[in-house]
Image 1 (cartoon, rainbow, N blue to C red):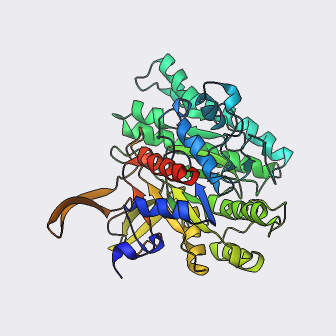
Image 2 (cartoon, helix red, strand yellow):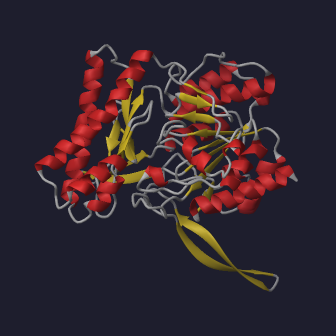
Length: 431
């Protein structure tokens, strides 16, 4: 069997976008689970400047009931995706039915195509605690720069804090992108700022525990270096021109993307069979976090004959070597890794050709991602000379040959290349 004849699920770093289009258009029982920032929108320093293509929004309708988003960001609020969707339309009346369905807040904010949303499994006390977090982040940043302005004017500091503090309803966030750029020539100060925000979020977790909300929250670092032995995510400090961790998201425990895969799959079965395999009230906060336990839930509760081919799409996957006593260990992380690994594992366990799609977002405004490395080569097919390309290095450490995650199809051209493929597939579906 030649490489080109292998199903996409068995390939690595493939550029065969035509075969992906074929799967999307010819397979009836598919489930697309897609991240947002960096995948269908470019990564930007200020989230308020994000834009989304109207053609893409229209294209998602071609996959109605087969397409859902899964993001750590949010649907609602001034920093959510819904206002970006609304801006893509000249007439507000055209927006209805064009919102992106699926899970936000890492899996605790559900929305349908019409913008109707809910927070399954979240208590009033938890929402009240989260509401106060943005004010605490603002105060911490103000205090940091009161001690020394590091060459920034009061007006700059005020504007940067405005851009940094994301007052999301279920995932308030400190996004340090603008400060990383402003402090490029003072990297040690930026690292101090990273540690300051880390210290604040640790303190908030302690305060929540004292208020009886011990198991309610966790902090998601993006990007990160995986998890330590206790399950806590590992902060990635800035190094060189790389910003390391820029997003400090104060999130509800259980709001992790891999659990969201099962929430979406449960809903998918309801839409196509009329029944929820895990019950209508199943939510991310009830589910186990261990991949084997999540797979066991699928095996025990779902009709495997109806199990769709799942296509997981993300852009944040990391792998970094750590040398200790001559031994090399790899810290593997990235906010999309967990859900992509689960999509892959479900495919392997139940013999479905699930596909992991990676969009290279290194060309955006953020300089914290490693680009895919390509090389050109020449083929001679019966005298016809053709120039082609292949990917020779993925987003992780080149030495990490044992990374369990296989990126089946990749888009080195970033979100624009992915959108072109997606809209082409949608046009074929609608033809």
